[in-house]
Length: 153
Length: 256
Image (cartoon, rainbow over all chains, first blue to last red; front, side):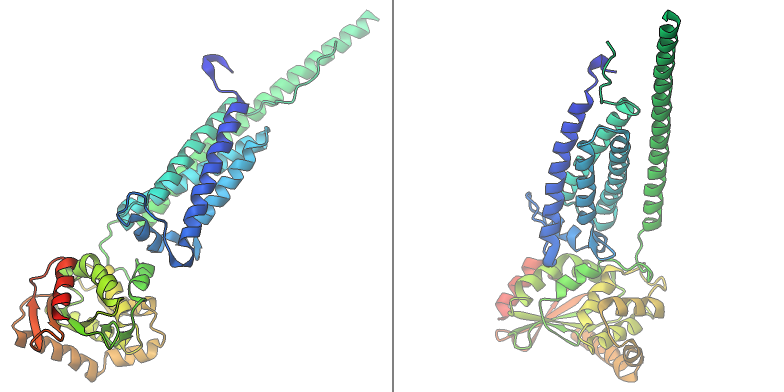
């Protein structure tokens, strides 16, 4: 399994935890900035963030989409702390959902809202990385156990 | 004795192999589930895009967009019928527009937001919208519908939301269903009253009156602008000469 420098599961879990923590930061910033009618500040200017935050697509049933992002990143962070198949598959499923949702939101930004918010792009990039990491983890380590069975001697 | 030990050894080997097979099965199942999940995710994203997508030609009463953007654009200034801004503002910018006109839509989206933010929200100017119906039959009922929304303090919400959801020029989209959907999403509370007023002789007559007024001014296209302030000689006609927010801001500064 570790041939061709395939990353160890412990390493993958550490990177997943780190990227998920970054994601929580980004999604939390968007949520806080948007609350009270405001909008995230685009570092490069241009007002894209305001346009995106004010569009009708920024909320689902009155809830800012970034809140769903926080939830997803928290679940992904939690999955990185466990080394069993539930965490591997759960992490993969959440990351897949997050990645699919990010693809859809990016489509909305480009073709519907016609404005780009760099914070949303940052989140989409992080979610893509998490999807790749979790897919690698599932493919590489599904069905394995890290609990060492003591040998009879 | 040695037989027993061998049996135990074989049993242990068998158990280990079974565990390996179990783990292998579990792995296969998880990977199959994973592949299934990927397939479902692709289908879900494609369905979402198809449902929300298609050609976005506007004029869709079922799917009005930019409601919150319009709300935040006009919520900082008071409204009186189709006038946006403080009543005591020194300068009045008058827009003669047609709700079905795509150029007016362009102004509403690209030019006026900055003017509203920099000149109307600050109390320096107010913008008055007057119907100048030149596009087609549905322009007059649409204009009257906007005034009727204005009677309930939502006139500019109506105008801006209409423009942001404007359909293909004269394609027949601006029917009762569309006008009503825009009214509801603009925050018009009493739809029955709005319905009664928008078809009243008074409001339809008002639309025809402002159209005549625009023709009297010599305007031939929409949008055309006029301005009134302490430094103007009555109503000064700007026509369609101004193109950018900065030019409008300059005109307001000169008039005030």
